[in-house]
Length: 109
Length: 113
Image (cartoon, helix red, strand yellow):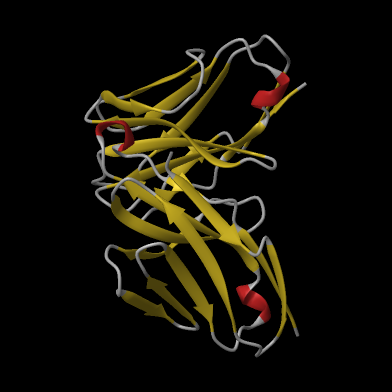
């Protein structure tokens, strides 16, 4: 069974640009979660989508947004990129336990 | 405020030298406690879920236990391939907590041959 997949693996942007990260959940999972893992800060909860709706969001500014598509895949958009947005962005999917993908490494120059 | 604290931050062991990692938590109501393993540059790999005090789970050389305030991950006779960062996370009850895992900072384990 295929696990959670994320694309791209790496993404390099400059300050002020927009980034789009993608996630495909495990087949049969309807919930998708996004986390940010910045150096020295640990994993921080960003967003939770279930059945196409945003169900909860963490303490991040509105320039972090996303959506979930009818096939349950998801997109995370980060607008007006700042240097401190550089991090590993992790997607997880679940029916109950959250299973993580390999992450997208975002570097903001 | 819900919080998870892991100790030690880093642990060096010789191959075969057993030890324990600690995860202390403060939550309004515990829905579940999770252990993950993370290798450098990769996503966390699920290990265990514990739901109530007294519960224990085992997998190969790893055993996780849970009390009302903390969880331990015991590593018996570790091998170099057990080297990784071990993450503890909790999920709490409450409308603002739904779906959200609160992670500790992790314990980085190095096992030398």
